Length: 468
Ligand code: SAH
Ligand code: SF4
Ligand code: F3S
Image 1 (cartoon, rainbow, N blue to C red):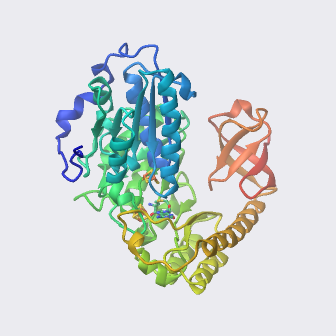
Image 2 (cartoon, rainbow, N blue to C red):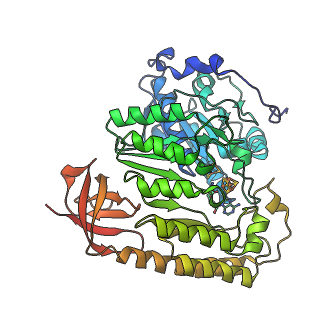
């Protein structure tokens, strides 16, 4: 069997693919009455890609279903960040294979970051021939054509390299209150443990004029919040000439008067004083920063290729805390990087004790094939890594609870997003500092920013009441 050419990029001009963004190009009657089941794993970027995939499926007439068994097409939008991604993919494929026994016309599609991994594509070709289409993160724009022109064999479209940045993409947004806005694609940082630069390609920033116009349209449509998306948002524009810096872009987005602006993820290395000043100055830029630490040990940070030391991180953290009023800072931490010693781990705990993060996502290092860290010899046993993770989680959660408890008795603005899933009598929303609040009244306030009195605090959420 011959592998598709994954090593050579097939470049196209945006002119050639322009037409497929226009829904009218496709006939919505093609799959009228048929249903799609879309499952997305991974980060916000993948979630936003899912919104594009949904729009493309709907342009052909498919409508959504929550039940795989009812679907005529199933798409799995995968994430490759950790090893367990494989279990999720192959578990899901088992269900699809079963469903195809009952419905032999079922179309099965695999996309997302795992579809960019050569070994995964090879395995899908060799062991899962019932998968009909496979498309990579650079090929989402081909989805309709892939479905319409599919053959009786497996159809694979994966470019190893990124192409151009496409504009005027249609999205079926999950919310009419808050929206994701891509400001850049890919990542140039190549942290030694991370697969993202391989699955998403090199950094490509969108033109600021396109970003602003997208946000202006969201404002016209009544959106209350935008989250600017990128793997390394504060490196925005560095790959373009004559483009705004991230701080300048933030300013320009703030001038659109969208009520709330968030952004993920910032890299400590690209954080500037100008950014801190802009965030502090504009009330519609939320005082919330996700600032991944990864490790508190300068030795490990160097091996990770993170480009900052423990001391530099702490200096930046202190500057952010002392300049932006009431700012909340959250982080990501990896334990068990190859040969992380007890002393290295103690440095991580030390940073957590100093910064008292509002919350943290914590992970055990997972070797990803093709990354430099996966080739490093590692003498640390898994049970040691698990113990470290548990210890770290206990510490991190105690600070989350302490940070949340400070809210009790205060009145804070909350953007109410919808009915709470756990309790239909409640609504939920987020504070400007990104804390989840379950509110006991206010069903008529969905889509509005209202003052909420915080009555109770848990590690991962707050309870509150709207003051009438
Ligand atoms: N671009 C962002 C985050 C990307 S992935 C950043 O630079 O911070 C989200 C998080 O997953 C990372 O911050 C990191 O903590 C974690 N992660 C990435 N690769 C990992 C790996 N191989 N093993 C364990 N965790 C990993
Ligand atoms: Fe991965 Fe590092 Fe890029 Fe984040 S900055 S996506 S961790 S390579
Ligand atoms: Fe996963 Fe790809 Fe995002 S690997 S974390 S979905 S960029």
